Every structure is written in C-alpha cells, then in structure tokens.
Length: 469
Image 1: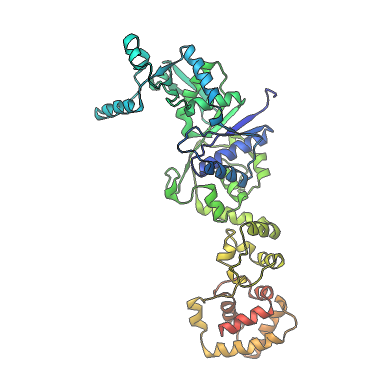
Image 2: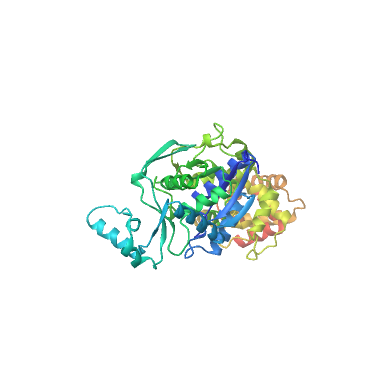
C-alpha cells in the first residue's frame, strides 16, 4: 500500500437500525474517500455481546447498499480480533502505561453512589494502582480489568473542521482498555484497529470529541501516529433537540419502507451539515462525490426537516424516467394482487407518465392514485352531494351512449367530443367534467380527465360511469 493512499472507515455497532446520524457519517466518509480516490473500509464494532445481533448487522449492510454506499475492504468484525487487543493491552501493561484493576463493577457503582450522595462526581481514584504486598495478595486471583494510566498533561489534537482542541489530563480518569471479561472497550479497540488498518482520516460525529483525548493518549503510548480527525456537526430535530425517536422515523430502513428514493435520501443527508453550489440543492451521487470536501462541512448543528426531505424526494422523482420508477415499484411488490385489473408494464408506464410530477413518495401511487388500478369503492361526500341529482344522472346516461359509439378513445378526441356534447345540451363543459372525474376516481381532484380516460380505456371508463349512476 502506498503511504499516500487515503483510507477511511465506517465502524457501526450492530445493536439496532441504521440511524440517520450514522448514515450521514457513512455517507460523508464515502463521499470524501471517493473524491480522493482512496479506500473505504467497513468495520463492525460488535464486542458488546449482549446487544450485538446478526439481524442488526444485516440491516446495517442493507441500509448502506440502499444508499449506494459500497466498501473496498471488510467487513472486519472486532469480535474476531480479540487476541490482537489482548496483545497490545499486554504491551501497555509491560511498559507501565497501564495497570490491572481488580475493582468489581459493583464496587465501582457503590463508590459512585456514595460520592453522588455528597454531591461529588466519581473519578476512578487509582485504588488498584496503589495495591501492594498483602493487599495485592487478597485480590490477585480475582478477575481484573486493564486500565490506562493517564498522564497529567495537556492533550491536544487538530480537528479538520473545528481547529485545535485541548483537554487537561487531570480531568480524565484512568479509563478501561480491557474489561474483566477480556473484551476491549471502544476507545482502545478503535485505536488498535485504525492503526492496523492504516486509517488516514477518522471522520465521525462530534459526540466522539470527549473520546478523542483518550484515544490520542493510546496512540502516543504505543508510539503510533494519530490519524487526521474530523468531527461532524450534530443532527437536531425540528425542535432543535438532538434527533431521536420522539421526532418520528429516524432510521434508513424506516424511510426506505415509506417509499423514499435512495438518491433523494443520500442527497438530503449530504446537505445536512454541508453546502455545495449556491442556489442549488438537487444532486446525484456522482455530483456529490465531485463537490464534497471537508472544508464545506459546517461546525453548526444541522436541523432535520421531514418536509424538506419530502420535497427532495419529489424533485428526484421528477427527474427520473418512468422505466426506472416502474422498476422500483415492482421491487416493492407493486402492483399487488389486491387490485382488480391486471396491470402490465406498458399500462404502468402510461400511468406514471401522467402522474409522475404529482408523486412525493413511491407509495403515493397506491395511496393517492389507486383508482388507476381499481374502481373507486366510495366517493368524496362533498362532490357526491353536488352531483347527486336527476339532471346529472340523465346527462351521464346520455353521454355514456355517445362514448359507447366512439371508435377513437384518445384524450384530444374525448375532450372535443365532450365539449361538443355539452354545447349541444346547453351545458357548460365543467358540469360534466367534474361528475365524470368523481365517477372515475372517487375524488374531486385528479390529473387531466381526458388523459385519464384514455389510459383507463373505453370499457373501464363506461363501466365506472355506469356504477356511479
């Protein structure tokens, strides 16, 4: 491997769905490294045995694929690398930069409780570092953790987004490297893995800033160079509180199920904390890769706006071809067996050509435009009240006879026929157009009536008007 090769990693914990915040982190790493022609590494941090599941791992992989994010190496699983972490923890023990801690979790919790009662915050007091002689003999057969011996000095690092950041060593407790069950902690395992996988840039959320000084200390203790660091701004909900389940859907899978396009979701996430060209918001993946750089990322928190995401999805649907939308719908199992009329690809493409610019989500086709696939089973009550009279019934009966005689059933010819018929009956065209729309769709608003009649066809159009009568 060339030393100049840019290498980044995305390292999720498989303990649930892919949260929007994690998805943006993965996307920014992907855009950055593809722009630099480097390598994207996927690592699964699954050392939390109680919470990590294969189902969550599969969902994370699926969410990445959905967003168009692929990887060049991995996935590496931390649970398969335990011997490596043991080796480096032992090195730190031998060098005197770490020590064995025999305090049980229960003992630690008891000390925390007692200090809390006195209004003080617990910080590990190096109790086990001071053990010797008889005291050590009493505990040496107990399970032990390995703690890092934090030097009381200034710890600083440069953040590519935020500039120089400094911490005081005195404020950091001697943190655990290996737990009593021999599993590594996050702050230790990620340092070892990032070094061994030759990671050059660590791009992650700003919630990791408090972890960074601990990791910098481990790098220095092992004699390793710290990778370049960039901490991304938080994502807030519309109420400017950290995005969470109380704001509604927060996972990639949830938005996928609702009918959002991967291109729209990736586009929206890319703009949550970064800006590209002025007066432009709609981009495809190739353009996002071309424009992305860390100096375009803001320090300010980004606000997740569900309505803006809907708008973005609508814009992406507008620029997609009908064939592509049809393929996505078919992948989602549409049209299903619940519809009364058989729907082939040709018919679906005709419908999409007419309604594409009215779609916001993929599933709108069955929620808002189901009348293209089955006759309405109910009618808008206000519309029904307006047109439920003998005069309309009579005119629709006569119009059906006219339609039945037609040999051509195209939108222009249908419009001309209806307007001429209305004129011959001393009616305004809208007096027929509105009840026919209601008869065909059950709604008072729809795409162009005559285009719709052409798509439905002569037989279906007449059948629905008769059912309405």
